[in-house]
Image (tube, one colour):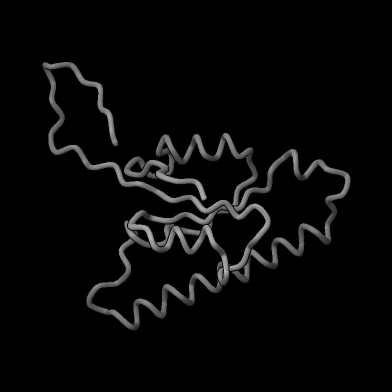
Length: 137
């Protein structure tokens, strides 16, 4: 559902439709297989963003140390490589109709931010004004 506020004197010419975005928040689980929220997102018709946040509150915990962060980073690198392999395989299998970014993975996004700030930026379309968050999984 999209709302536009305009005065009656100026109607927009060919407004672009807003596309819904499923955000899969990788809070603790950075794997592709057997991941319920990721499976739900893949089955929808929405574009998908996989999101991992290095949250400032989390990083300031005394129990978080370098080896923990290295483990997370290695998992994210592995996940990114798996996603790249999936995308390459799909393009090779279907050269006529490659996976449309409107219906496939947008990206693996890694940020250092609070969840609220990140979701607000995504929903307001700061990176791509065509998209608004449809679901957070």
